[in-house]
Image (cartoon, chains in turn green, blue):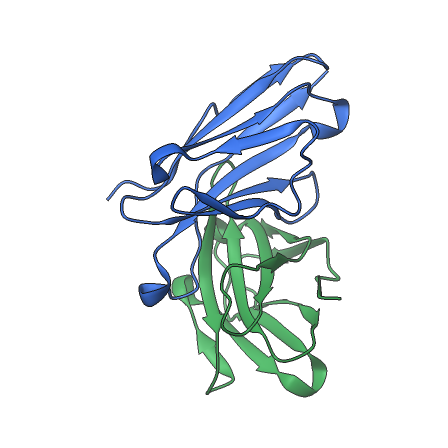
Length: 114
Length: 116
């Protein structure tokens, strides 16, 4: 069965520090991979996605993610966190050629210390 | 361009009462989704529409939940009667037709339901 695991429920980092949010997936084949962000009181917004090709993908707001097939991982990174990055982050997968079957992880809530 | 609009933003009801949520997707998006997000969890699909047709409702609890998308534009999700376990945020999302779909879902701000 498909599953998406985000092992960290909460993470706190200091402003200006680097960030890495973990995501592991279980799937029959390499799926499409996504990261979404949900700011308080807001809907989910797409940060970045991976379909194929270069395993390091760039997204909005200075985020990037690296796909590692051998580890079934798609970790999200940012070199320097800003206070406005405080939000909840969701990793999601969708099967190849079917964008309509999204499976979301349970999310990682990011707190940013001043 | 207006985003996905949902209403109401918040709703508090007592158990066994009915409740309805409304969603207006982005103009031109033919696919509409209803997701439920329980506290501390990621969104889970309830139903997906392609135009006015419900093409995936396998996760919709049909004994108490119903949805419609008349004319293939806005949609309503209804719960009758509500149970305590229905407390959650109900998210609506839309996406364009397959030919121009880049995999991005566009979400509304959600409707937070509290059942007492």
